[in-house]
Image (cartoon, rainbow, N blue to C red; front, side):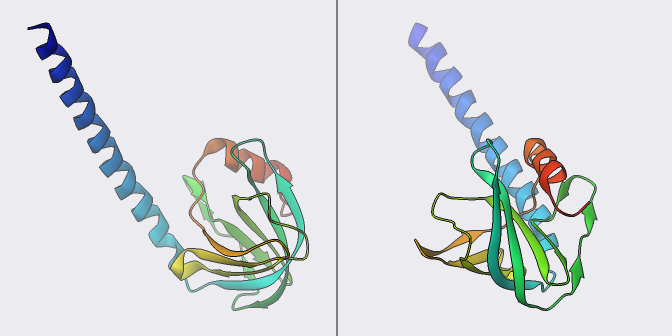
Length: 146
């Protein structure tokens, strides 16, 4: 009889986890539909700022190619993972230890992807709408865009 309580609690726990995962995935997918805006940015990393929140940070980019000259749209409950003004851009995302000044990047917003061609690694990462309040605060405090 006492094992029956644990089994029921375990089933309820699994149900709650599944519900929260599905709800979070739907919200994540809905927000990232905003990234289907055709923006591409290509350039060289000129600066790196890292926060203490899971390696989140800002990549400062000297833009060599882009299909926009300016992009800095605002969202009510998050921020875009990039801003562009002329030949300068910033990309907001988790930054891994391999990233260095001088690395070449290419961001394709429609695919929600960023390609790295660096001294230490050649790989790709994901870009997404930033909703974490600590990350948003870090961008507000450390961005060159004021």
